[in-house]
Length: 493
Image (cartoon, rainbow, N blue to C red; front, side, top):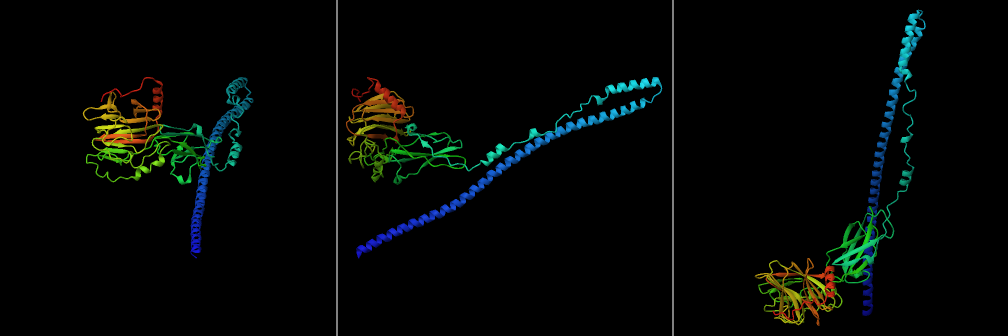
């Protein structure tokens, strides 16, 4: 009985879920019907507007061309009327002269007759009737102002609905991921002169290959792209991959999106491990600030914060759990230190650090996990750093194994840290100009953790960054040079 009841309950639950699905689908269909009606009415309205604009153009052209014909007709009529007036005047003068000549034939006196003959001859010589052109000055033909609309009529009859653009094709070989920028290149499968612009969409993901439904993320949209290539810059690569897709748009309609393409976005992502930081440090994700009150409020640790990042780590890079130092005690004494929550065990990585303007003293570097709770960065054989002292005068120095080397270089606004674990190289750069500040050469034998120390001030750490192209070029150049390795082994503290 209980088994049958349980089976019946499952059937009821299944039917209820199916009914909900059908109800939702009915709602979707009703909304779709409304949208079709609304969109069709809108399309008809836009069509009427287009034809009204076309009628307006034709009407305006008709008026202009009719005015041209009227002006030409008026010019010709005026010329013919002037010629007609001249003919009437000449005819009147000629008829008067003809009458005078006829009367002269009746003169009997020879002297008078000769005198009248000479007068008539002189008047005939200058008579306007004999200087007239008896041909119309202008033609009555207006055929040169006739219009042949056969071509235009054929074009108008060929008007069709604007075709939907085809989906573009992303050229994966031409896509570039570098310097925290993604350059996407695409092409149309066939020439389409009606394309007005393109729309590019991208979203971050931790899954390679085709985007997964369960990993649906919000698409970021970039509209009104006129070219077939676009660079998305200033990205933080806090995911392993980025999906991109493109669609083409003409004046009225957008086409389908291209097949999504997944591009790998390698970068080093980590946060600050607040669980082992000095109590005089106030830590929030990637920001740390010296707190003279003794770090009250730091005792309540959000242990789950660091675990959420484990899904975003690159291969061969692992999170070490709630405490990067293996659940050891917090840093104490004058070791105002906090470590990163993610280890480096291989590969090349890069991050940047920006100090507050009034920060009196801070260090940036890496360390093994065995850094003691009283230890300071650069004062052990297992830590390397550069140290900036702004207390009395600004001093920049490189520190390792309790030895220091003062660097005659201006302190940058931002420090870039480059770590090549496999190559045994740790370099510091001016993050803005990419000028090399200092390089340590060694062989790393244990996983590394980013390390930070600050006193009377705060530090902001930027992660999710790729190794900049400019630094990659510098490193290749440095590796080709022999005898250029800096060392602190023989420098006293």
